[in-house]
Image 1: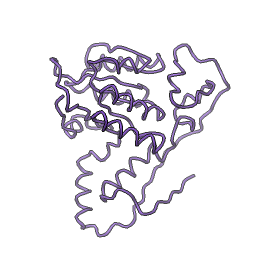
Image 2: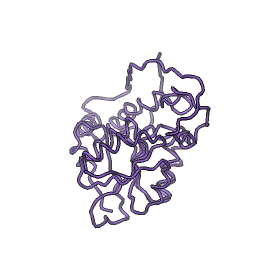
Image 3: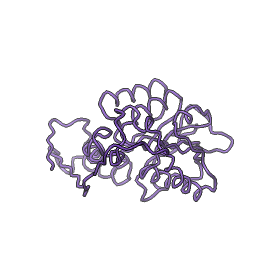
Image 4: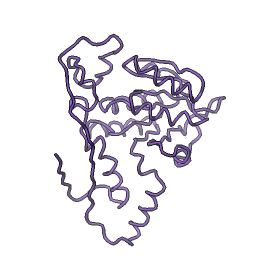
Length: 267
């Protein structure tokens, strides 16, 4: 499959917080000259990515996948508005992986599925765009890298802030020494998140495959509110999930892989 210029995509989706460069270098494009995609997870973030992808003429959204059937309707509407066709719906993402026509998988699930979903997609010879955070653990992230290299796949993580043209200019300026020696960097993350109310245990709604939803995380009793993705059993916390953008930018701007020391404060 022919490689796509990452920045061309970014310029064509101005205002969209996404980057996508999962064009495989090992396969040739089909007769339609389109990259065939499966989207895994179409909640708020998944639908935002869909809204960007449907602006492209070289993409075909073949599958929408979500553990909750109720998510299909809003996602399918986005595809219909962009391409005037309805994608297939599956609850089990493995059905997408079994389809040889699918070139790449976009993973926009909650955090718990990022590592295993990426590894399984690589094993199925699919390229991957996976949302941040990379995984729930350092070990999981290393296994993702191993899988991408073993199966020769293109895998991109959604720390797309470094893809903006102005970021390159800032990095060039800082690394040139014009700013002087950089010995301290401060990053901030402020989000007005309200309390999450977790209700009592209830029967799992018929629309949800709760086993697939929990995936590699503990299969705890279903409680509305726990369904919200930012709960500790299924989530890595704000530093890894959101501040990863700012931390990644600092590393990129100053050209240093790891800091000498780190401290954190919050409340």
